[in-house]
Amino acid sequence: MDRILIKDKEFNTLVAISEEEQQRGLMFKSWPPPIMTFDFKKADYHKFWMKDTISPLDIIFCKRDKIIDIYKGQPLSLTFIGPDDKTDMVIEMPLGTAEKYGIKKGDSVNLKYSLNTLAKRFKG
Image 1 (spheres, one colour):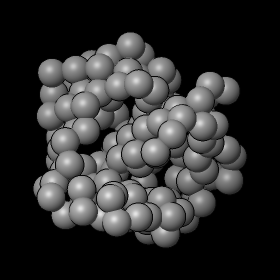
Image 2 (cartoon, one colour):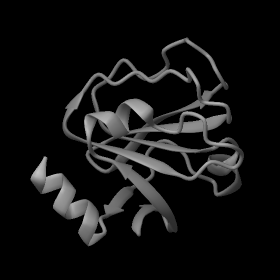
Image 3 (tube, one colour):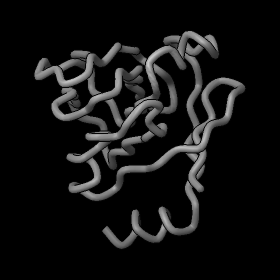
Image 4 (spheres, helix red, strand yellow):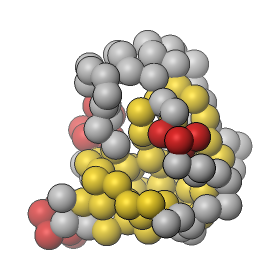
């Protein structure tokens, strides 16, 4: 299982590596959805929408292993959300998780890959 360490809290996470996994994200996942991490190979402008995502989310945008912004994703919304800065990682969590664990801008982030995800990452 992949793990994401945010500040001093560690969580299980699904990692979206392929383009298909990144496009599907947490669509159709019932409450509470799993935590999903989108790990991009290079920093770019990433905006997310909630089309077909039925659970509300905390969407955490990161760059160089630091949180740069946190947004609340509303179920089924077609509005694009995200910072106007480049990011290289985005984490989706059930809404309220960031507040519950005191996760905020500036916190450190470290993704720990499983062997399966590492193999998929290098294969792609």
